[in-house]
Length: 162
Image (cartoon, rainbow, N blue to C red):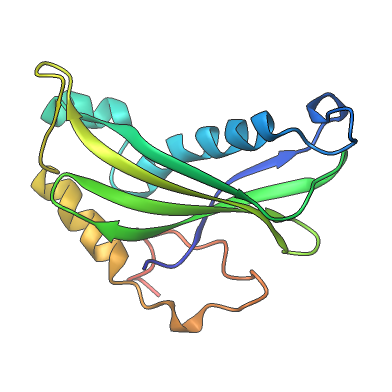
């Protein structure tokens, strides 16, 4: 597993809350989906770059959200992500939504991203340069992570530089 990387920050606005007073489930998905778009530039390059250089992009084949603690209007959140698997045609990420002040995890999002050829409308192998970047990030040793969530600000391209 790679070290977690912070990929998004946000605020729980009052209009995100439902009649029970906490953030409605649709907004967790909103934050996680927006955060996922920030992953690729951190590991290799944007979806546009993937399409321009290899005529592929990724699609989400599976997404599972676990709701652990409620969030309330005014709460500040951050989303971090870890690469948990690199396959032949896909990779898996785990995103966590943490409270900025407490670093408590409020939700997790496990997603399988499949490399996709839009011309054939089928899964395709991960292009070699992207695979190398993912495998290098996957090799980041997580032993120096702190259990209270202070490990959320890593960048995979700079992890080998430290």
